[in-house]
Length: 460
Image (tube, rainbow, N blue to C red; front, side):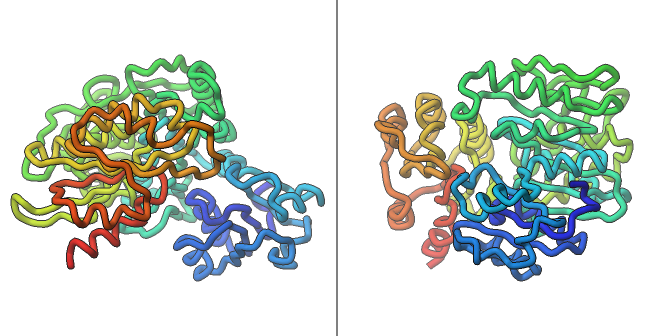
């Protein structure tokens, strides 16, 4: 089904961050949208206010009557929804056009010039930075983001005239194999999702295949130092990037008084004095990737680069400050989505760089039993960088428990002197009575939902 043939769209798993962006996109085209999710959330509340019909009951009568006809109805689902879901089973049985979210994003890339950002980590920040840069310029873009961009209060940026789309290319379940990038960016290939891939070799092969999907008139930008052996089609321009080296890199990085400035070096030139709107060390690397991709579209000017990166507002749950009390003894609370050992290590290092003389407490909630099992030593090593660790129970997400796999297999390996295990429900009471200085909460689960309540208790 081509986009022009669609009359209505039903989303199975409409409350997911990526699904919500697609739902909003189709509503912007004037199409009726409905969907199911397991539980209500702020995203489903917002979608309902914007005109979508959202239900939370897993039975057929909850599907609006107009959406039960296969004529012109596109059904979009996420792999996180079990195959036993009653509406999904009905749609399959009755011959509806049933597609994964990734396939529909692929259709978008085939109808536009897609800037597709992939990687074990960094893809949400780099894609949202690139979308913000393009949006600040005269051309604009349609941006499908993996997080809510602050200041926009949305995970979707729209343009009715731009030829460019910006897409977070998710490797989970090999979803990014559905895309046809105009420009592909690979930020990192540290093994993850081994419940899907099984081995590091299979994971790397998946990224190599992703590079084969680039349009012949397109470009590939790969972070230096990766194990990846890309296989772009003939004619595709290939570049490297990083903070310190490559075709695109940063130079003259200056940090001080809560600010970070750098110069952006690109093939044949340099844009000087770019200020990071979110002054975290890892964002130097992220900004280089975003600027490189936009430079390759031919729309980047020095003025646009400086203004867009300076005003980049950041993404919710990506190094987000919830409390920053003034004074040398003021308490700080930061929340970050880091859920892979390398992400966690980078996040902790960034906080250390910002507050080198303060005591750092890290509260971490492991995400998935399989990831905990596969990376327990690496998680423990990263957490040992903190002065104090508060470790919560595993957030299972889509998984059933694995015998013998609990947070304790991380906890027992943590080498810092002060550590404690808690349940998520005890987090606020535990932390409000501790005299922490700088608190970093990390993970992709639901511990972050407790952070605003903790900040309220602190302010009291």
